[in-house]
Length: 194
Length: 194
DNA sequence: CCCGTCATGTAATCTGTTACATGATTGG
DNA sequence: CCAATCATGTAACAGATTACATGACGGG
Image 1: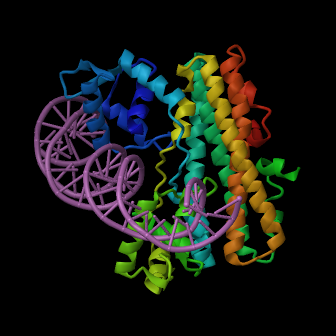
Image 2: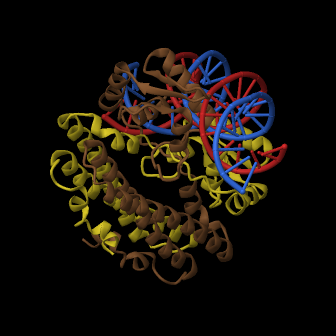
Image 3: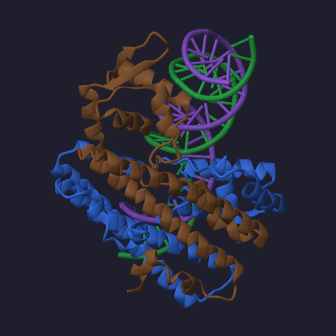
């Protein structure tokens, strides 16, 4: 039950948040960590409040209910981090498409690769903007250092992906050219030269 | 229902496979595309055989049942690739841990980062070996070009991760040093310098 | 006043995990 | 012959999605 921990992580800074706000971050394309649907989040929040990991910190005149992490919640978050084995299993729809691309003709394959490229470029842009905005805030707490480092990772991951996608187009379209040759000039793959 | 498409993709080369063999690839740490548990795979295979996307190609003296993709199955695979929108939502347990690391003290954080580093190094090794083995096979079909390109992507993703992890250790342990400075000399992040 | 966004939730359904059961074969 | 691996499945449960329902508020 990892949504539980994703919620605890989101509240761990101490700032209370509403279900709506949490949903925004769980559906955000920039948040490369955990996705959840709204109904799931609301259900989980009710359950967690009942079990004491979080508590209602504020119930506004309007519908909004804010939740805050409790001490047991913070304990559980740490317990999870240090005791539970990380789960490295992956379900990546777009990766699966990339491995299966060869079943298509060049026209369709090219189209799909370009669509993926467009998506990654969009991501690259919004991550860049976010990082630039943070440069001006100039905060330097432990949380922010962690978050900035993570966003730098995500940015370089999407840039690696973009570089690879352009090579992948050549792999499908230039069937005579050896695959290793196509990728050997990638800066991001420089370490492969050893 | 993406497991369906993962199975079709695995059978798409035309080589029949048993449930057991499919399970091996779905639980393989190297296969960075789709994970599934054995019981789920067996259930899905029975269902797909009933609906005609795959068929039993061989039922051995022993328990083994081999499945092969059918023409409708191949059609469905292509339909999925070109018509269905890719799902970019992510649930990445180890990524979530990395974003939450700041709640821990340095000792625990360092320990977890080192554990993750060990995992990624193991992956790096097995991907390297796989690619080297393929160099000797020297096949050059459309499938193999696609697969080689994908493995090169996974390898460079792993190497990017390794480089980032070593920087991330510094982020937590050298609280005075600015985060961007720590990562600016990464070769994989070279494009950020523009 | 109507539409879009804010804000939360229920119910039905589907997807995926865990624990368990079963039995054959292979290598030491 | 015993343990590990091969090989498949069932049943109960947990996790997640979809469609739907509800209502408040703010701006044009």
